[in-house]
Image (cartoon, rainbow, N blue to C red; front, side, top):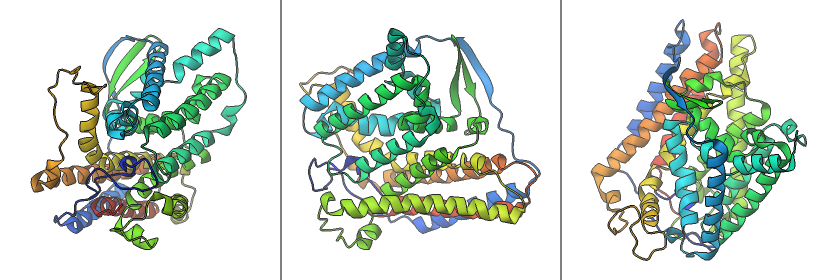
Length: 449
């Protein structure tokens, strides 16, 4: 099972050793888990396809109140905090595990925040560092309208997500604080300039992290709906918000398939299978610089295979149905798979490097402070050698993967619309089964880099 995702390969150079234990070879009967999960997804898909109607998942209002803090204020404060973190990246420790910027980006922003958003809704909306500054600059200069970026759809977000995925998985030193600070500052400058030129609403379709977190948050069972100065706390079946989304455009479909491919390749690229495929000895890895080209090609190939497989399954379903099946709406169901795999894939990262983040928040300058009231503690990975603890971790990952695919199957049937014959759902159900097995297989593989 993976214990060191690509985000935390901790050498700021051309080699790619990892400060965390690279893998744990489980003695659990993971093949039995995979077979059971596949059978469960298959039976669920077949039963729901033959049912007259799927379960109702309408949301309800839990509470209503005034908005406590305007987004413009919280966003501007977040922008200032990010600016301070960039300074820490440039001027602070060169050790990624002792630099608040790297800990925030790779543990907080990319792991903890998405996981929290899957439960509590779109938390990024309040702390998006671009919304408030872009709005204030436009007000200060009296800017109206835009420059036509909205016509590009989600393609700018696709480009941003691909660049981020490549930087994370392929580039030489994504964890080096100074490199990360420079790349982050350049990206922020470009996005802020575009948001000022087009308007802050453009971020919801043009900035990859806003798009990705906003869509993941649609899985949450709890969320806020803000209308003017009022906020309503809603509760509903996980994924019920997805049913209210408009059909995905071709650029949005490209974004979803890239997000899935990025997570898949992140799980694949360090496995013995992939390293053997590209001619690398997993026990004598020659470094990231030696595999940049082949890993770039691998990322693109996985993206192409992901998009082709999904679209082919939908096309086959259309032929079996004898009438068109809406691709845009059905593609929304794959957001559940992205959410489930993100949760399972980064769970161990949260439990390990999350300890470094907690220690850094308690003592940000590493001089013996205790801002959170915690006593000094040593980061420990002893639980990784505890069979009971690792069984619990694997079971949690298994539930996340299986639950996500069951939810995706349910959503796909709802989004496909009524009146389709049961056989039209068979290709998509088969694809969900395959994705379930692939996700569990990637988590169960030992890694060598």
